[in-house]
Image (cartoon, rainbow, N blue to C red):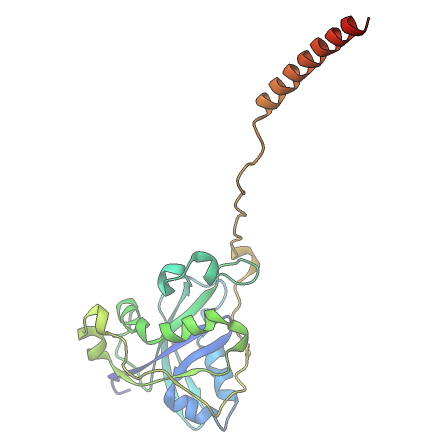
Length: 230
């Protein structure tokens, strides 16, 4: 296969396609199975191995062969500049994302963790929008092609696209889960430990002392009253 110099960022969270190549979103407008194909093929399997870059070549009808390079990562508060509690799901479990890039042909082994790290800025907008309100996400965002050489050469603070987050307004029936959609197994979930509130009660030994003092004062008062009235 010929070497590819262009890649399209892709992002899947909780079985939901959040960012997909623009040429596939055009196709998805008339073929709803496209989203399901991406969710099924760009899948780390079980059990997933975090940070490991996987490569998968698959065929999309009327598009041709595509190659995806992707990895499975936890969604952290540091990544989206939010508190840790913000990035957990309703059951306080850690959420995970599948991030990567798609090429129209093989990339001659050039796609690795460093390039996925560098292309991450192209999917952060969609990730933040999803975390703001997961229940109302209407459709995947369209990712524009970027040159591998541009991603590698650009300084870390300049790797984000100027206009790379166009919303597909026509296609609004985005499936929340497709065939083979990956969900985090229950045994890998992490619960948030409840934080104890401030202790407004005095220590036990102080309460005991106060009770003893109160009893002594009561006895003295009783003796005084007995002598006065007797």
